[in-house]
Length: 347
Image (cartoon, rainbow, N blue to C red; front, side):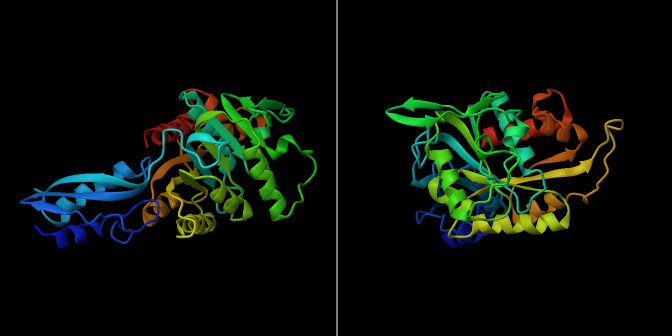
């Protein structure tokens, strides 16, 4: 065994956040040491809480045994460009271990429904959860959490006057919907919308959190760039339906965050409305929007498929009534969201 074999083997391992292989990504340190069938070297990650670290190391070990020899024993060390403390944040207003944005390439795929239920599932798992509704022009979280009539109050903290988030179902939440007339459209230019989002981040009393979820507007806009510059995102979750017209836009979203100028890890993809299951026939599946489109896209782009959520009436009713389906213990849809929350907690 010689160093070039190790390098060639690592070209078969891709980093999920960018889709590039480890050599192309510059993640292999120049410290390869070989003794018989034992090899040691270091992999360089951007931060010490990288969500893909464990999976990349396992994939690296498998690649060495597959492309060099099954008897290879690897001793893989990790190095970091930048270390983060347990509470990692770029802006002092957000003290969160994980800052995760939920994105969709187009509207109507259920991104906000997924975000609301994921937030509730994480809270039910004992996590401290904050939720920012960053969809300035179409805020929906107040209705989905049954808090349309709530109005945030101000609190004093270290000599500053801050907005106290609304708390519901164990989730701290802010939305422009709490501050505007719900019957009137928010007609703001990009700069005004971005400044409003910044204020909800900077001038709020969020406290220490385990997860800070951001419900992004669909597509790409100034708001996306503002959040990327203001916050050090742990990663992005992409939501799509199985139909081709949604998959096209989902692909664009993944490529935007993978762009070297943006470079935000893709934590995975959620396929929403994966099949229709009528309440009276709970075992039946009807693939109204196509079958496994999101699953196929995740495989093609080499990103994790976090889950497939069925299209059932109770999910829609829960969102409209302010009672997210994740609150209904034992419901199949609630269990689906719970599995996604559990997978995120393990990463």
